[in-house]
Structure formats: C-alpha cells, structure tokens
Image: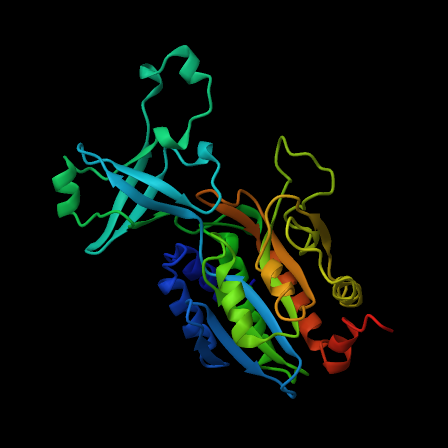
Length: 359
C-alpha cells in the first residue's frame, strides 16, 4: 500500500458522516474525484462521479456508502446528561464506556457513554446484558441549561471518537471502515481507470443513509439508470477467538470477499462467475461470503427498473459496527486490483450477456 492510499483511508475514516450528515465525507470524495470525473449529486445527498470511457454504455455503477453507524441526541435530562437513539445497527455491549463526538450548531463536544458503575448494581443487574435505555452520554454539563448553553439540542448527531492508527503487520485500525473502505475503493478505481481506456462509463457513487434503510442507493440508481452494479463494501472477518470458522465469513490477509448471498440480495450468477474467473486469471485470491443477517446497497439497485445485475465485493474487516475496525492493507490493494480488472471486462456484449435469459 502506498503512503497516498494510507492518507486517503485516514482522511475518510476520521471524517464525520452520520446518516443524513455526510457532508465531510462527500467533500473528501469530491476533492479526490473531481480532477478525474464529472461530479453531480442527487437530491438525497449522494455523490455521483461519472468517468467516461471509450463508450457511453454500459453504465457501470459502483456504490459505496458514506454514512457510518452512530447516535442522535433524543433528550437532555435535568442533570445535563443526554439520552440518545441509535442510527444504524448497534450491539448494546459495545456502546457503553466509549468516547464520542457530539456535533452541535456551535461546534463539536467530547462525550462519554456512561451507566451506573458495578458498585451500584445488584447481583441480578450485574449478570444481565446492559440495555441501551440504561445508558446516557456525559458531556460534562452541570445541568440542562448548561447543556443548552453548550449548543446541544435534540437531533444532534453523535459519532464514535476513534483516531486512525497504523498497526503492526500491515493492519490499519480506524473508525467507520463500513463503508469508508468502499469510498476509498471507488476513488482508487477511478484513479486507475484514468490511466486506461475502459469500454464503458463508470459511475462511482458515495451513497447517503445506507445504514438507516439503503435510501441513497435508490435515489442515485434512479439518477444513473445503471446496467450493471458492483457494490464496494466491507465483509465481516471471523478470524477472531470464539468465531465459528464455517465458511460464512472470511479472514484478514487472504484477499477480497465475494458475497454469494446476503439477507437482501442473491447476486447475478453470471456476474458472480465473471468476478471469479477474472480473479483466477489475474491470480488474485478470492474468499467467499454468505451473510444471512445484513445487506448492502445492492439490494435496491438490483431491482431498479427492469432489474440490474449486481454483485457485492468487500474488504475483510474485523469489529464492524463498533467504535473501530481493523483491515489488512494487502486485502484492500487486491480488492482495488480486482475491481479494475472486472470493470475493464464489462463491455457492451458482456453486460448484455448477463441478462440474456432467453438464450
């Protein structure tokens, strides 16, 4: 991995980007893509970067969602604590005792997610999973009026505080890899395509509000009218103690993950086979993923209009939907290579063959 790629991943990871508040991520993507592609936006907030190839068709859509899981302020208590609601899928046990950033109209505030200490719990309470309703955010306010003076109001966005770190063994620790990794993938894809004549027109998309309903994928697909789609994402890595190694998920350091199915999408079989064949020809490793819980932007895109052949490729990532995740640099680089090789093969004849069901 080059220093430039690490810098891009750091910039994207540390950007603030809750569902409906993706401005910082959108600006980062636009800055990197504008010199190479025509930038536009749908009316929902998704960024669309159009990279013209040697042909105007087929239209190849590569969505990566800009938003991350987080919280929103629901209530300010009389004592100045903040009650919250979750945005995106959280497991309650990873929410408590963490640092957060509350974005108010007057600036950002540090916060800590607290609950009663173990000394104040009964034996029965200590043995139960902690419920989200029993947690709160502490911003250091003395009371409700003080919290309001600090600029807090209901609806304010809250994201995890977790700076980017380069770890040992070529591993990168960062916030919001789901799906800033995908955002970086499509940026680097366009950068590579700028050096080549590709037989199609590529639309690299930063979608809005994926974590709360896959909404930006729907609006941007309407704007693009794609003829084929490759979702740029992360996949869950299961190579940690306690996980079942049953082939459902994949491992860090063993290459990109190709999803065979998730809870919302069965990929186009011919496109799936094309990705597999291209990986073999390019001598790139490929892992296979089945995800029975959770889905991606591919779900609404594949049923847009008369249907869009779609597939989901991801970089293996540990600890998604928590404060930070870990990825392997080699996996990222190999996923970029695979995306480039697949896109280079998506000419008009190949894409038409993906849906020629009567032959």
